[in-house]
Amino acid sequence: MFPVKTYIDRREALKARFSKGLLLFLGNEDSPMNYTDNAYHFRQDSSFLYYFGIAQPGYAAVIDLDEGTTTVFGNDLTIDDIVWTGILPTVAELARQGGVTRTAPVSELAPRLQKAEGRPVHFLPPYRPEHRLKLFRLLGLHPDEQDAKVSMDLVKAIIDMRVVKSAEEIAELERAVDITVDMHLAAMRMAKPGVTEAAIAAKITEIALAAGGTHGYPPIVTVHGETLHNHSQTNTLRSGQMLLVDAGAETAMGYTGDLTSTCPVDRTFTPRQREIYQIVLKAHLAAVEACKPGVPFRQVHLLACRTMAEGLKDLGLMKGDLEAAVEQGAHAMFFQCGVGHMMGLDVHDMENLGEVWVGYEGQPKSTQFGLKSLRLARPLQPGFVFTVEPGLYFIPQLMDRWKAERKFVDYIDYDKLETYRDFSGIRIEENLLITEDGHRILGKARPRTIEEVEATHLG
Image (cartoon, rainbow, N blue to C red; front, side, top):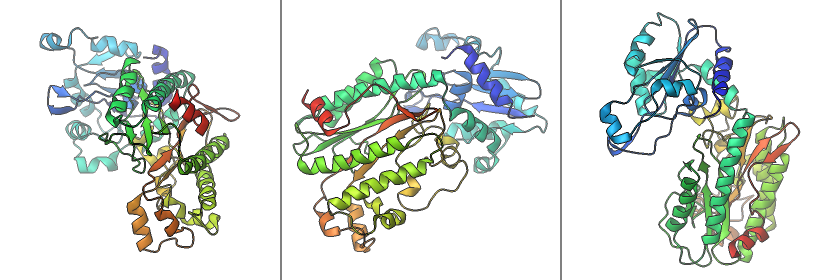
């Protein structure tokens, strides 16, 4: 946990945004894999973690703005529990670490809320089934009605606070990225014909766990980089392929790194692989350089798109007026997602609070294929931490569909594109912090140029 003052100050800043009512925070529960006592790895709700610092299941908290009280609700272990878990901190001990002195058993939460007597009870969007069941039991709100009753004032207040990272958060994120770099270096050094994706996934998992944390999200370790979120790890690496690894370490405090590396399975890239990799790298460097305070991230995204389109035109894969091509979305044949997203306590930070509020400040998102997947568009501010991750993906099913529809034939050479049918995909991803006068790449140095990647791979 951070120092106790951190959590007290966060709650005081949040309370200053409201005049009356109760702020309800629901922590997460254990989630069984196949029966009650065999649970998935526990992960606390990030907003609960941010304001109270308690990383144990079964907790909730209420900030009563009218009474000026804050109460943490949780149940102490029984002797039957202790037989299985050993001695753990009490509810009072955990609450004090976050600066809260009032505690109560969970059974008192419902009566406490029922005494609100018409005062507003502010709660966040439920994203887990137990949250919906709890809100039904605690507030009498049917699950189908809950989304419409979410407190947008609380959502916006929390986003305003969490979106700008403090110095101690940045230090923790930097630690997460450093561990993540070690994971990617290990994967690059293992990549060779005959090695399995599963063996590489096991190695990077070992590094994350040995550092005292875990994965921030299910790792992508694949020779099929054209599938953006490919979590299958059943292939054996073969000569001529590339390995794409998208993985991030989460520290014990819940902060996550998020990097992607692409390297050849052979000792060096093939000429064709080098050409595509260099296009992605050029777009990556252009996007990183453009990240400064006040610059809308949507512009950074479109700059990366135009840069990659120029490289693709040089190879004969795109043609015509590239400005028009990008404006109309023709480049999304090759780049179907956004160039980055917020990160912090969540790998896609605060996405459970609403992407349109986190990344767009309430402004509407585009409905255009490709651009609609951009998670961050708002102007950048000092303290923002986010990813920059351009990529080029050759998806046979998308090629076939657009070609059959004669879509963007003025901008895409489908005959030339057919020769890249089995290319797969390349992505390069780094994590940035916006500073007062520019940006800084988080974490220790890692290979990103062709020469650096091949040197690491050979080493």
